[in-house]
Length: 334
Image 1: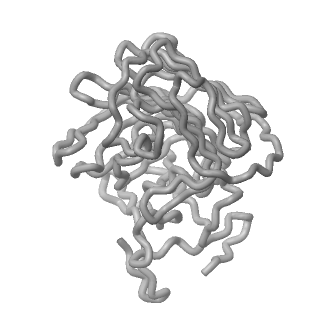
Image 2: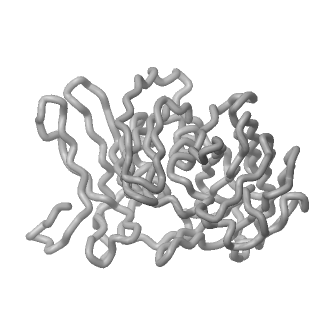
């Protein structure tokens, strides 16, 4: 935390220190999630763009920054490819598990991401990804155990960041979550329709959202298609702690219409002891394949373990209400 006596504001602040102990800089979290009103958001659009003594350039974000447009868009537009992210990300949201979302964001952007989450009960999941490839991960829910993981991040390919397909100019009716048994094959929420197939549909639901994804007192506008392991179709399926392992090892999920500015693929499988297993992107064996066009997206997953969730998570940044502006100015919104 940083107390700014001149502004009389308290910030959630990351301090960047080089390997020789030198202070490189600091970054104030722009997007709060549960800290308010005790903590204040940054009042300007100031991305955490830093270069270390060895020449390594990193972008620094904090926890919920990962699901917002800024500062990530600004850092990616500047050419930043390596990101570091401390987090206090809880595990209750079945459609937004921290490791799966971090992996999907890394895969969608082609960036490298180092995530350090809490190690306390209900907040677990840390790792290192390069273009979605899991280099090292640790997951110990329900305990204060954790492990320090180290991995060598390979150089970025010449292809670099993948450009997104152009979006339709959609003005969709906002609705809530809609659920159906996976065997039904299709479900819609407002203008967002989802289709899915699987070799084994027993014990799974198909869910669609066009509206606000709510977590306690917090929410974000989103368009989501999800296949979740769950006994009965309903809102309880969104609670990760209530998921019932199914037997599906292959799932294909399709989002028929797409207005979201950023789409993140998430895939989680589970071992017999319910440890989260992440699959390999762009692989047909213990992996997933993700493709999007201007009008929709497809996510196919295949695993030797039972799949827990297969999710296409799209954020509607145009519906966000933010305490700052990132339009080329540094004007604060207070």
